[in-house]
Length: 296
Image 1 (cartoon, rainbow, N blue to C red):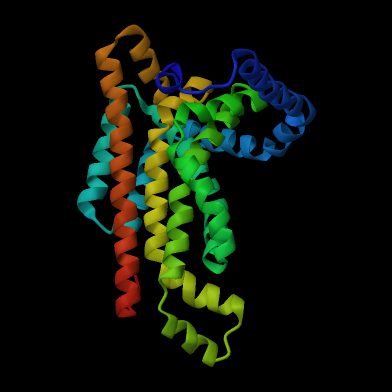
Image 2 (image 1 turned 30 degrees about the vertical axis):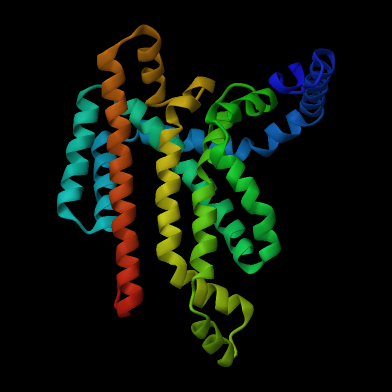
């Protein structure tokens, strides 16, 4: 009866040896290649530090005006622009300016990395069913594995600091832009592609002049979701050395400071809402431009 009530399992000694072999293999890999991997990511670290210093050292009125211009360019909405200005003024007044600028820096760099890596992968998936078959399970794992699990191999490989946190954010946030780029290109009307071929368009011309422009609304939806997921990782990334709004939230959790946690949490929410509204508005304008043929 014990066979029916107890699930068959590996012996404790074998299981311990199996886990130990995995850990030792990864440690050997870290010792052999960790320094080379760190050097590979040095330019990314320098760019992140430069951008963070730019946000923090620039006069706050210039930063506010720049944010307002970006919001208005993206949304063409006076109300949203005024709302963004008021939100950032309140953030600064409540002494969260430096943390917010640090968060903006890492989210900006993470978004750039995700776009630079995710869109080409999405294009490859759209062009090759075999690539899609290989990449899709990887994306499924990236989206379903608990976010804390990302931190273990990243910290073992690169230690504590900005780059490990940035990589953890990128791993968590990149799947939407890959999936939606793939989807957007695959949804391009076959009749349009046949017409472009009839006019003698090359592969590069079809991709750059037909497929990507028609897929832009989907691609921007992917950018929107990537930014939202990157913001949701801010608090977790702060556990391994990333500065920003996540650090006060962690401190509030540890010391049960309700006001500190709520204020910084709401600042993250404000950033998420602004990014969401601006990217959605820009995506809708791209869609309208595609349908009407008029300038955005």
